Image 1 (cartoon, one colour):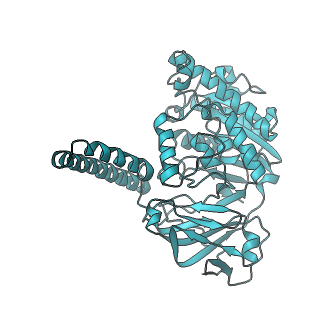
Image 2 (image 1 turned 45 degrees about the vertical axis):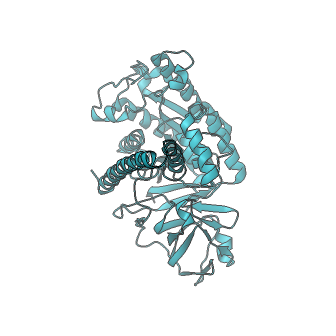
Image 3 (image 1 turned 120 degrees about the vertical axis):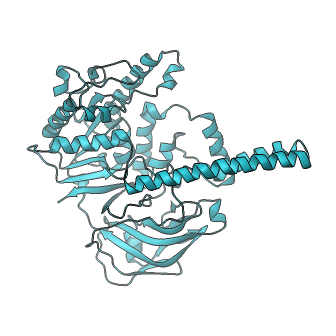
Length: 471
């Protein structure tokens, strides 16, 4: 177990222990109030306590807001001197910028009293708000990508709300080639991962490819409510998501001939990797043949011969697609930041398929659609920028690559997610009630683009990637 994982488990264990103790203490207090004051008062207090919990204490945050983020950038990272005076960030030395650089500002934030109940944020020009944890008290990383002109003009104002900035800021500049001008292949473990992480990138790429590894057929309760049995519901969901993986990229101009669905089964990639020759069947669809979900592919693939869901077949399919597309840039889940088991295996499969292959991409970009530590990241509302996610492993060197996303493209991205069947069902009633409470008491806005939480997380003015390999 890695240091970051064991640390998270320790924090989670402490969080659950403290929550149990708080519930027990609260129950005893309510009983005491009912005996000593009035029988009905505990009922009122219980409702008030539940509302307070939903408003301010329901976030899944498995670290302390007082912890410093521990990013390690490369030793040669460009860090020009800057000062922050009356909220204005000023360059203390001449700096040549062309406008497409990734700019990251490290600064210490300390939450105010209200910042324990309302999300603290830094306001930036262009109506951007980058939000941080309630009760924050530590080192954080603001994303200034897209603010180059304001910085050069000395007009970059940082407006802290419900928090204050402490100490001297540190600016890191990452100069980068425009990968949109190259052949780009996005690896999606499931239908919608490509859109969530990289719609802005692939919709502008010169020659984009989308390769989806699994049908995403499990957890099909929504279709069971239509009267289908569990296997039939899973098969229908898989067929629909297979269709989504081929059809939705057309909205962004990706040719159908450059969209591929490999059809392997959801949450089974790790079992396949453990025994590369063994066929691993679907958990819920009662299927052992992946060809059911490959019917929309524009060309045959090696595993079409037997339809077996094996790791070796997956590698053969990936090698065939890589040789056909010859991508210069491959975009795939990040091996450290994204903990979803299918995402980890998808990244491992691509790297294994590339070993010894006659074609090699020059750039590997990682993305994170899920996090170990914080279910709300990116924090804040739709349309905001994306501050760097929590990171507590200083032994791993990270290099961010950030792509601005225009308002028009954000709208198109939202529509692409709206077409995805997996994001269409209504959220559970309890979660909808929690959102209303948080909107009223904690000032959190509901995304105008859709009900699913991914509309809030993904429709942003930035898409954030990380270099895994670059020449």
